[in-house]
Image (cartoon, rainbow, N blue to C red):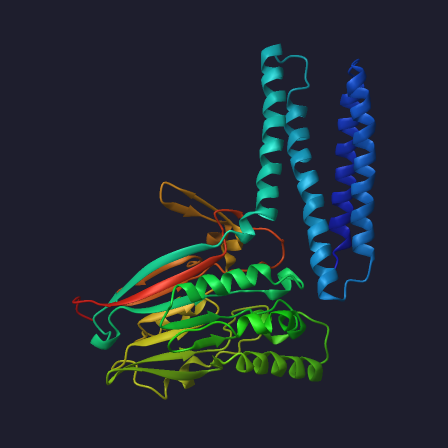
Length: 400
């Protein structure tokens, strides 16, 4: 894991200053209990800083070690971010010119906000990441063949199996939930792992249990190419081939810039699977133009599987491709989302035009699944729960 030492040292100094400020405020009290708490606070602060330093100084090569390290870092942040907010608000109440009632109100507000934030961070760490959200979405299109009216597609994305180390319980629960839907087709839109194929090995037998009438179609995401490792080019190639082979051994059909045709009672629809599309930072592996040149999108209902939803606006809409439905993942809603009055808000909307849910322009649809796993922070905050989407295709009388 790459460590940015300068920001960390600055944060460490800030946190030590906050601890000292809290200690001084406690010492001002004449209550015996407060003096005991001040000593306890010092012990906990030293333990927290020590645990953080040890975590960052230890070699973090193994996946299990990496997962545990991210948990320690999150717990450290969960301990200090609320304290920072408390100190910030409490410091405002210190000047003597404030009336006593306002100083008391600010002190209560500081403690309340700190406890609330700590509770939200704890829930995002321990509860929300394992609370599966099932979304039911209907897609209407006049281009859909009659035999596919009511066709049900289960869309999942971004498992990031490295999230769970060797603990298979949550992934097994996801597979059971998916199979219980009895979909006609399962599609997985990339990021099976976070770094290397080794993360997926403990879950292979579980992934093999995914069942649908027309099987499982999958594509690769930006994390599925070993681009976030220090491997040599030869090692990356070998590991990448292992990941592709693992999916095939699970009886998944991996679409690497290829197509698959689904048949029903003499009718058919086409699924196009492109490799990861990138606009910066990582290579662009997608070959949309050459892939769809082999089919007639205007005469066939066409579904595009693409990990990055930016392709929908940048390529599908811009080039006026006759692709009826695009299914993507990638954003995770940045693992932070708030839902209020039927509206959803996420930091992801500052980065992506389309970041979660259904988007429609004319007769072209995009659905962005916010994923099942986690990457970066080991938490999902607010309503950014792991998502399993059931899409039902319906014939529409609206002209194409």
